[in-house]
Length: 220
Image 1 (cartoon, rainbow, N blue to C red):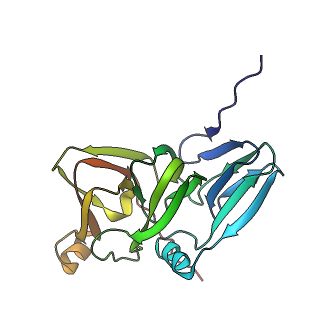
Image 2 (cartoon, one colour):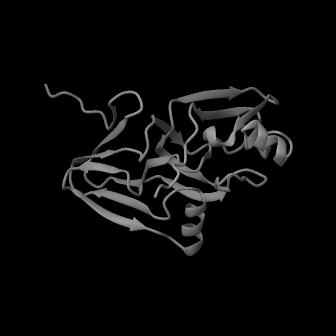
């Protein structure tokens, strides 16, 4: 009897995770540009830009301005990984909820999920962070990546919670949330080493990455 092959497999451990998709003929996957590691020679690749507004929105969200769509012309596999070190998380969406993906954390999704570039939170984010996030619409399987591991925080109704904006990965779109300076003003925030934070009000769920992405300084 043949061994059952899982559709999605998370390979390797620690901060070097790779997503393996065992695709069947006709399936289509939307993938963050530059995430393909290796694949069977059975996929048709299309680059999707959309309207100028969509391109600008994705650029401002911290993602590539272009999405790649891989369609399986026959059964085959594709390996995907984020550009940096970190974990990969799988979520099955039934379409009853929408989620926001923080800038730089989208990896891939199945055909039934569409991504819209929307304002990340109420208020303005600084410190070089995007003011846009991606909103999921539809049902299917979503994969996000993180810097470090991913911690899930569930909030009960009216519970308040504050998250450093650079540690956000994903959250319920229906949650009430806003942004402000961590120290109350620019001087205090600068001296404390913190920038902007997101304030959430439950009920809902927030996924948080345990490490803060570091922007490498350019050398000579």
